[in-house]
Image 1: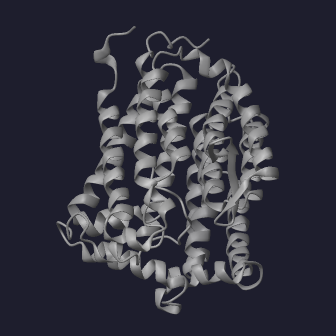
Image 2: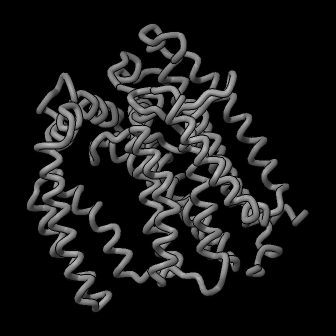
Image 3: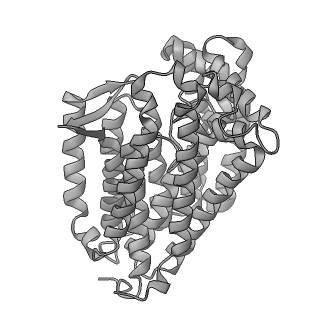
Length: 416
């Protein structure tokens, strides 16, 4: 076994800090005075999460004794297993909050898409680094990698889990860029998301963004066809968003978008979540109202306060200082993981570590953005903090694999 001083203890301690903060917030959101408003099943969430944290800790340690090359050898088998599990979940799974993404095997259960995130990262990374001549600069290889990611993404869409589908889609530009996709093409791939976001606020914001991004892409890549494609894609995105808002989306989805741009549009309906979230965070002040003292939390004004809006619980009861500690802990984790990726000589380890960082970052960005009303409410948990057993286990295993490959980076440095 390697010298334990080479182990990234700072990442482990950050995981422990976020897990502890999550347990404290979940306790407040389910065990405080608010418990009288909650069913018994929700009141048990704290104890369930504590159990998952304990199990995850031993899993994290156990993964460190696995040869890092095992993740390469088993990646495709794990990917196929994950797809089969997702198909079975789609056929026989349990529907919760409109998403049919939960499976049960005896007393055990979880979201198949959580395991599929890791399986997709490992399989795609293995493909893109399996030979020296494979690079995302080659269209054929890039498209193959995209297909590997889009297959589970389609299944997640069919499960009606839009938030998780966005995580899979975010992997495409990240993994291709790290595998050699040019800067301009990478920007072209993410530009529809930027344009769509601005188009939700005002259609002309999206149109202006489409023009600006096209100019940047042309300046970076110097390819006329790519710039024309970018401009056309941008205006199609603007038109598509407007069409979706006016013709395609369900009334409750339209109400969510309207509440994002104007919470007073429906203050007792779709705007309720946004108003209560902003009230909770804003009322916390510098140091917060105190543990178990948050009025929005303890009077059950916050929706899903143990999962999607747990950041609001922290902001209300521990104030700006508590929220800042969470944000800084995540930023430290992201920076540390990227440093670990940069220190690897093996491309598979690099790509897996960067992709795991991207998954954590998108979760963090969307969750905190939704809680602070900077983004529409999509419904993604905050890694290691929000309640959710399968998500916590899957995220911990992903982090454990990154720690494993960093710990064995000297033995894992040869390409093949």
